[in-house]
Image (tube, rainbow, N blue to C red):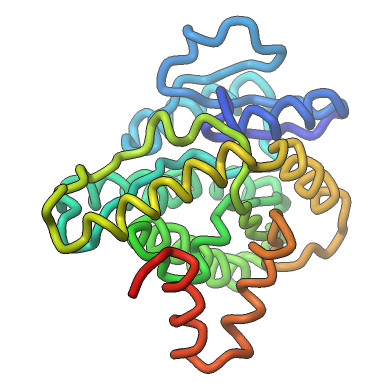
Length: 268
């Protein structure tokens, strides 16, 4: 019998790559989208789901269970980008990002875990970000939302271990996706105190995404994790420098690491 997988945000980007890769390897894959009717050409089923709406989440999960009778694997991938100076980012946009990137996965888990507990098995992979390991300038809200999910996963993992439900994080770096299309950008205030640094950062972000690797690399790592009987907690996928930046944060003095980041982002 095929393993049944639910991939939130499965209509584009990393989520689509994951869903397609697992579908091609004989998993029974369901993706999700707020507007599944726009993606009729996908080879796997898309369910309508908005991670900001618990009723929508519950309905999608119940539909999947009715169709398949079980859910073996949840991949919490749905997310949204956000950039801007911390001071100038509207609080409503901060709430929107946290609601999608942190509360959203928790809503999905509240709908999914009762079924996994009932079947006494399950695998959960939360897609976070290498940005979640550090407070990046002009990406602080995004870093905070993904960092929160990293930490929450550690707690879930310990709490659910005796239920035979295994949790892992996968933190991607920059990959060639369309994430920038849906990202909220706080406007650059041309004569503001943050204008120069923020402009430089936006240019860097665009360059990194354009030069990013194929998101299939994330899918390959996830497939390897799913084949492990006792998977680890944290996995990073990205360029050597992106992954090494996490190691540097552990070994460098705090001010030295901060100085390195500021130099990278063109900050004084």
